[in-house]
Image (cartoon, rainbow, N blue to C red; front, side, top):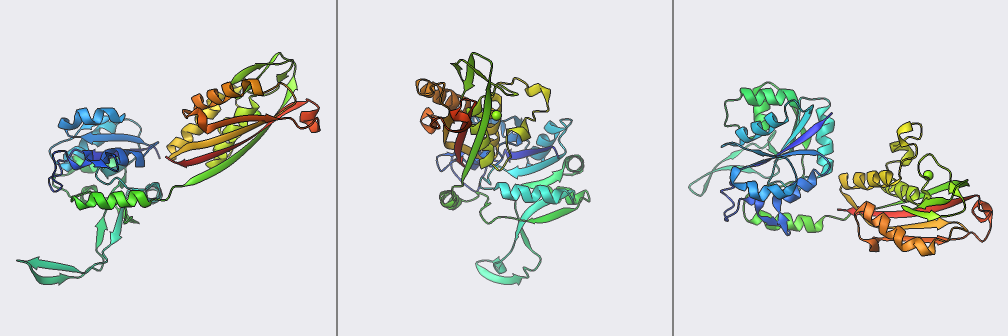
Length: 372
Ligand code: MG
């Protein structure tokens, strides 16, 4: 399903205090809303803002929509902005819930296959009281009670129709959906997906951010190309003069192919052939930086960045040493990382085997991805 995310950040947050609305206050060094956006990296996002916050929001690099006087009106403005864009499903999320995880989004999207709506919630574990004048005035049965969270996921057309028809004053989008007769599945929420409401919530959120374990993913790649007639080879993005060329469907950049496969490997995303099938004529003679850019882009979409990579070229000739720094620089440029995170080195195979007989070049690569 073509999915978009509407992040509602138009509220003024009167319970939080402070001069700046809570979604624009700093959490672990960056605005709350920047954390929230990062949680949906790689997805299509519309950010609904208060007109007064336009200057703050413009640097975030996402489409902005001005909200209305109420939460309902703001959500409707976001939905209207997406109408006719081909979006089939929408996640509606409070900007002040910055710690939502990709796993929760995955659970919602799975539930949306079966239902018109799906929303996260946690069962109430504490006893519930009614209070009056500082005294307990009664207890409330907590059986069947849930604490609702966002994002709340819906099929696009029914939730747009539901919002257009609703008279206003709903607490959340599930209330709007149910008023229109939509079925909404309860999906297991997350204790860490807290809504920043009171000043103390910032300290809790920062503690959760600090405690989040970094995910480290390692991948390897291996590639071989045979020599053919020619006067140069492409290796790690650098044109190296040689008495032979390398045979291949693309530019036959064996080093860049091994590195690209290492990144796909770290993501458990197959190899170049899966993403750029050799049977497709549009990749014939393609420059290999297209493959590497795609792999690193996919990593970013999944919330990963390259920590380091190491490429080893195996050949007797051409000599790699004089070009290694340029190769490092070029790979780093393509991937948008520091050259200090990229290693290119070479070895001969002591005249043994196909590389030793100078029938072709082999390359091995390792890439480490870490959570961005
Ligand atoms: Mg190859």
